[in-house]
Image (cartoon, rainbow, N blue to C red):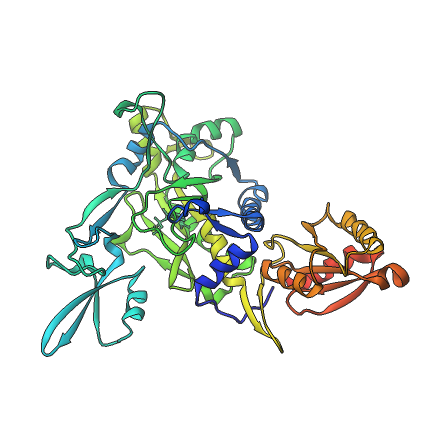
Length: 483
Ligand code: ATP
């Protein structure tokens, strides 16, 4: 496993590396960008694809009891009526009287300070109370969330007065067909989960699985977030990786524990440092309307701890709600016990973009060398966008010809990049910055003397001479060392 002792504290370093190296770009940048919408560049798309593929492997391909699924983004509006999203998928929003800026109520914290014997109130925008306390930087100051204040006309972080909270539905609306009226309204899904509930019977009947079993899918979701923030952490369009695990009522609590553990191990397996992960159980007041118990896996991001995944016990809420509104039978008959019941559902719901961000933050590293600072991404080799870079020492016909031969041997086995553009030092720097675990250098010795190449390990910078006939073994050994 790559060892990283560096802790990224300034997110801007990662934002600028991402832009420079083609990981993530601001959307529509030539028009000034679109707030909090991002595009994955040629390097970023590979990282995201690797993470999604590893998830698919663990949650679908390697399991007999989970089936894959891929639903449309647009669904019948009744889906959102039954699920409760039309009535209650809202955040309380407050607005500054001076600037009109809107905030989520739970992101505003009020601090009290004594000034010449008088109580002074001021407000801070933060993700949670820990971050608010850090921003105030004075342990003696009392801080409370805005919603815990009874007083009206509290100050806003921008100098005005905060309005009363009002509920704001987070679903994006659009129209289906040529008429733009109420009857034509459809919604961009705010979660992928509902498609798996409304297809439960289709999947069950076509696969003849027995409970417990799961349905899993990855795909885009949309939420008109009031305050998107922190690079790709909270955006209005994002990708989710969700699995609905249908089980017998009464066995739900044990399965909940099982999926919490499974998910936590999944993040660690691909290199997130365990000290940067924690589990946070929701208290009763925080639980969404459908949930009996929810636990978040959080990552220690540069600004504070933030949610990567929620594992919820959704009970039989969704299946019963859809059965009621559709009039269809969504129960399960258990032949082994002759019982009919509505299954309970445990849901591990992970954000693909947030996972990419967490893996990038965890892998970011700066090392002090003699004359320079080396920046690198110590990504797990299975997540790294390029596994092997082929670097001929210089642009020379003989070197190119042998290098192309090496490239042809490796390209079907690894995600391989051929680069002969700049000085070798600059090329190593570039590959370090995008997290390439192995660089293969071809020099004149290779052509004229030993038919061998140099394999360089990203993390140790150690170089090893390997004969081209044994190059795959050499690479495998170095990669195994890094896993
Ligand atoms: P938050 O409390 O951060 O708003 P949530 O609890 O509403 O998130 P869930 O509904 O549990 O999120 O969604 C499951 C996962 O989807 C989250 O853990 C997160 O990884 C991802 N996710 C949710 N909202 C966003 C968003 N706006 N941008 C990026 N990823 C998101």
